Amino acid sequence: MFKKIRLPLMAAGLLYAGLPAWGQQSLPEGKGKEIAEAKCNSCHALEARVGNGYTAKGWGTVLRMMTNHGVPLSKGEIATLTPYLAKNYPEKNKPAAVVAKGPAKVSMKIFQASTPGSRPHDPLATRDGSLWYTGQMANVLGRVDPKTGKVKEYPLKTPHSGPHGLMEDKDGNIWYTGNTGALIGKLDPKTGADTEYPMPDPTAKDPHTLIFDQSGILWFTVQNANRIGRLDPKTGEIKLLTPPTPKSRPYGMAVNSKGMVFVVQFGTNSVASIDPATLQIREYKLPDPGARPRRIAITSDDLVWYSDYARGYLGRLDPATGKVTEWQSPSGPKSAPYGISAINDVIWYSESESTPNTVVRFDPKTAKFQSWAIPGGGNIVRNTSVTPDGNFVLANSLINTVTLVTVPKVK
View (cartoon, rainbow, N blue to C red):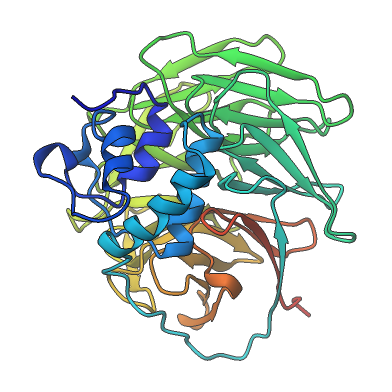
């Protein structure tokens, strides 16, 4: 009988995302098989974790993520497992990036997260010019000074809380979702104090993305629990709402100029809106049943833009009419558009499965794309942010970096 180890769900999922159903078939022969069997064979329902594998460098990072999250792997075991996994489960099925030419000129600057394998998930550009990231596998929030390159990390109170989404309040506090800790957190950068707001319902286990509306109310999604949350920072009260569609998996969020909250639903082909006064939820169905919107941005005309991760499209929804318009992303149907932002009403997003990942610019006035390869590969940009002076910020999970994209200024 193989050794059974109780691993944090997130850590198990990271390793198994690139592997076939180990519980259903024996592992390939080779040096490293015994370690894989002893450490991993009994931890997870692996048949649900078939993925695209990783390069050798990627596997090394994934294994480091796992050790950060409590998996007992020695340096020797990592050195043996990395080539074994890279040989038997190599990166595959990722399209070559298509770089679309255009007139805009950008520059990119990369900052390395302090802890190796921390898995920067969400970035956040704050009013003081800092760039923050959630170190999901290291249980930290990181702050980058882009002028000096200095990085400071803040450890969080609850072990393995899985920091995920990020947002700044008017007082400069940094709010985050504890994706595996079932909590919302507030970090005071001045003191390092970490205040936690646990979910009021034990089924709401995975707080995901969060955003403030104009009145200072914090909204957040709870993806797998199919809930949308509302937190009043003045009282700490949390209300949880349930979308009409079961298993809709509320994901990315944005707020329009009127204070309406919009949510893309990654488990189905729809976008939802929440009226902050009545808490009523309305769903807008996207025309293609295979659409799976993952992130969202809103332009000044209150049009809703979304990245269709499953089909490789950029989409636009007019909530006033329900009309949907879509454009194929430059790298094609398997490019997996993901993090997205609007900067001066121009859409910027990432293609997270192209090789390398790209930064894509789409001008709604001309309906033209332009794109750039991300130095170092990107790999994988899950969310994006915008600096106060209109530059684009990416968190690159697998290469453990934050990227600042300097954007041409509007004249």
